[in-house]
Image (cartoon, rainbow, N blue to C red; front, side, top):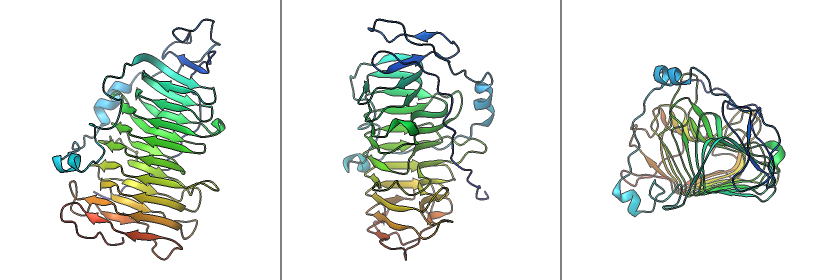
Amino acid sequence: MAHRVRRSAVIATATAAAVATGVGIGVATRGSSAPVAEPGRSGSPTSAIARSASPSAQETWALHLRSAAPSVRSSAELAGGWPSAANTGVRNGAPLTTRTGTVKVTRNGAVVQGLDVHGDIVVLASNVTIRNCRVVGSGDWGILQRQESGGGLTVEDTEIVGDGGAPLEFGILNYSGMLTVRRTEVHTMMSAVQTSQGLIENSYFHDPRDFPGAHVTLVASNSGPRSGMSLVVRHNTILNPVDQTAAVALYQDFGLNHDVLVQNNLLAGGGYTVYGGDGKYGTPYNIRFIDNVFSRRYYPKGGSFGWGATWDGAGRGNVWKGNVWQENGKPVPEP
């Protein structure tokens, strides 16, 4: 198969259907303009505009979904403590309350927990925590941190999954500042997390879906982090059985890459398993790939074309060391 040209991963911050309530969290029901009050809260919420699902969504899924091989978790991985379905996602026994539509968070410091959201969560406030939630959706994102939020979103012990009726572009999409993702499982989507800064750790991203015109990158950055920030991707299981685009990719769509640490992850698949950050804005710096385990479970070279691309070892502070093949423990050379 010819290498697919990656389309830009820019989604317009747009028409999130939502409603604010007294605690800064509201719900808009799909297919109806009628607002829904939060259970247990008095008072009427303000009006809302609902998102409507595409009438041809089911037909689109049936015609265009290209199936991928399921991820395989070996007993050795579980014994070694790699993130998996057994130790990420909603904690066992956590009660969930079903919501349909868009949950919009507008209160700084809000904690959203115990929800089974069939739709999406849009964050417009700072320092929000989403914990012990399941998000089942389609469209542009499962969870969005919008630019005006101020940043500081934490997503932990949460599962994000495509609904099976239409493509889910991003599990988590960050347009703002700091983002922290911990013990989170994301699957049945095209991309798990897109952010230029933050901390992604102890999470499990797997079994993406490949639709015509899509690029499949499980963890992606489109430029270097904001001033004073960094991006750390640490101790995750990131498995992409699709033959494009990557497990972890540092792109230069909008700016120079710098200050990224990718450490102690289990990585497999994609066109190239990792993209190292070189591009049109110049030589990246302080990019470190350290102590990662690359797997050949899908392709003999790690990815369908190889284990890495766009790496520049000459950049200031750039480090590639301690990376090994899972199958034999031998070093993975610089791309």
